[in-house]
Length: 238
Image (cartoon, rainbow, N blue to C red):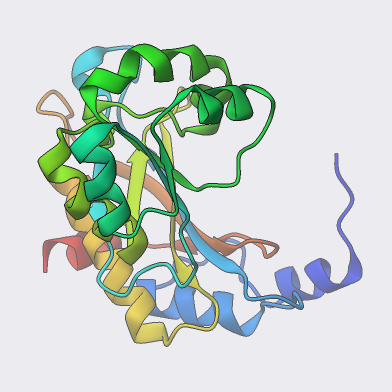
């Protein structure tokens, strides 16, 4: 078992282990116990009553958080011709319109946070599956990152504004960032509400009983703080 440092243990001591906090209480407490010397990311982790081995229970979506993520998002677009120019005009940080970028990424260069591609480029981008796939960066239509040229400006704008993709993992959990410790608590609550609304909207039809079994908030370095699942549902339904 990994050993935690003094600061983590002091932060953890301020959290009631079995208490179910309201979403606002949990987020405020996460901010209060933050001890890192950088602006930590606030993350949500939820266990769902689904079986991800079945295709009809693969919960996933993309949401645009109203207050963003509080960080600079670097976007690369794989496109050629007019589509490449659209990407440049829309503010893409990098436009990969030749094999040079493909070879660069194959060599280990990954100085970007979001990868977008047009369908004609997927033949070349497919070569990067082993590099981009494990990092969640591979463009694909379900994530809304493989799009026709006309949609490139919209996806770039959303990505830089706070676009978050979540997907249930093989342990039936989802993980997603919702902002920074420096945010006003109310803005974190707003971002969480949008994420929960999406999560509830994507509830599989076959799921019976409770859908969100457990939900916690934590910062990059901080302890988990439990949120009452019923109150989380209520927030997402507002």
